[in-house]
Amino acid sequence: MTKERSGFTLIEILVSVVIIGILSAIGLSQFHTAQMRSRDAQRKENLSSVAKALEMYYNDYDRYPDSLPWGSALEDDNGTVYMKDLPNDPSSGLVYFYNTDDSGGYYRLYSYIEHGEDRCFSEGECISADDGGYADTNCGSGTACLYCLASSNISCQEEGQP
Image 1 (cartoon, rainbow, N blue to C red):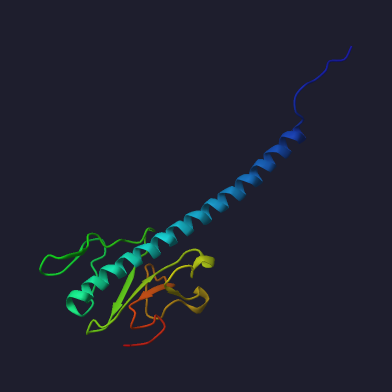
Image 2 (image 1 turned 90 degrees about the horizontal axis):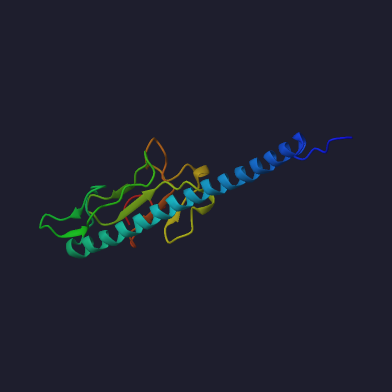
């Protein structure tokens, strides 16, 4: 009389583990991509909000501010608040970059973009990392900025004043 064995063989278990591992790797890579895209969307939305606050400031003073107090309120000397809290980059170690001329006649806002394929999906201009990013910008840790929003009187690609 022979005993019947029930259960899985070692090969069946190993095949199952390999399949689960492959599916997990695919899922985790998609999750990582989704996180990068989410941070990029947040960066672009942050710069868009700052651009609106800068336009309100310009309407009152016919110039853009010389600098921006990232992480605190954008307000004038009279206490008018244009933006309660200027946002910080959603990724640690990265910053937004603000540029204007001495007369405050234009502005450019720059950010780093993580996901290379999503660089240009909104109203701002962008440049390839292969091209080295925007010249003379630093979005943190020596990282060149790859995304730009500018006032309507200048392009992100132009050098100097409009």
